[in-house]
Length: 255
Length: 268
Image 1 (cartoon, one colour):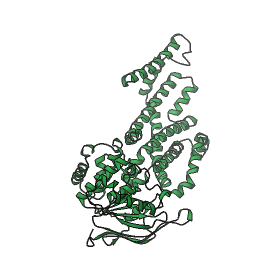
Image 2 (cartoon, chains in turn brown, yellow):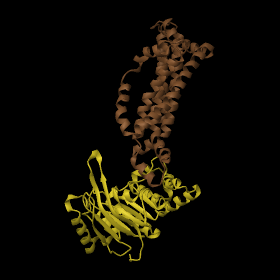
Image 3 (cartoon, chains in turn red, yellow):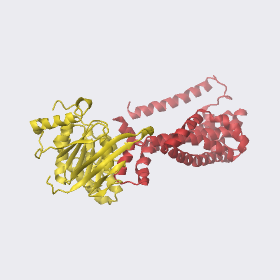
Image 4 (cartoon, rainbow over the protein chains, first blue to last red):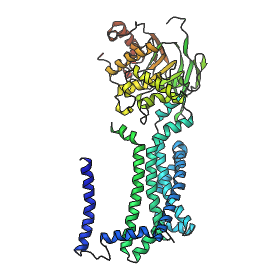
């Protein structure tokens, strides 16, 4: 299928969703207090984007997400490289990482609130744990993907250890690490919003819960769309970067 | 090949013991040989006899358990960039670098300035007819072209010695002989000493001045054959009676059908 046709089909799909939504309202198939018309939701969204209160809550959430990522991701990268490089550490530690990943981290939320309270620290810690394990596991996998033959070849050229890390490990690992970081970010956002929805004073999660409980569906849906668009945007940015770093890999695999 | 030609590589009673899972395995035993400056030396032997291990010891990539390797009389304990270059199988070209970047990579590590690097890489690629492929990535090239790049990457370092580990192993028999002739052409122009590992007896005899024959594990050198064939080598030499006799002699030495030594060569 040619690319313009693909884009057209996709646009058509989005338009169809809105058309069905609007038709349901027009034909009074649904109660507008439960599902308001698209126009109402977009008006609410425009209102939110001008509301200092909404923007300040959004800012708090964003700050928590970024802080958790900036702390969690480097820690995880370092841990992943150490585990990946050291077979003995890897053997003893790796199983625990995989086991931890199997447990839904949401069940630890009540414990986190007991340990760290309801403020920034608790959200940060919950975000960090969400980032950490998925990034660490992917980094271990990335280290294992580094070709031993490439390392031996570089050694024969006289490359130092540092040079091998920079010229062999880094490019070979980059696409896998980027995948880990992208998933780390998705998990991070899930964690932070969940913590906010569960118990918090500020943040988008709090607003979602408030508007849901008070049947303020227009604002609820507007905020939902806002968060969706933001996270999709963030994910796509990281995905494009990931694809760029891994371009050699896809073309090499296609053969 | 006179007695006056200086020795460039010499090994003295090399021995290598591996201890995987605490059980000692003798991989190489009592390996002593000498290679003369500018000569083409091949090493043949059955799969798993320790050929690659020996090459890695010569390259300074792994250490021997006892004995020593001397290059120009000095012991080799670590890689000697600029003096010894290793040509691996094509899998070692870096897939994220272009062809010319791959050729330049060792030079970059060895601190050659970027303009000179590019010029040397270009010149070497032209020598093997790949001047127009510098901007491609390895996966866009055929197996034979990748192997030529791999050889060029070794040559561009301008070493005195080139160690080659089954460089044509992944090629079909015809490309293999063609690449062999190509290698001989480059070799005659550059005058390097080449140490060449192969499991093809035909290839070894066709290319070399001297063929070292290695036994099953533990790898020992069981014979040293001076091929004595005139140069330049031609394909019809492969069919000659001396060639066949030499091949049969090696074939018996390394245990005939216990090995894959001449697999696929019956048609030649």
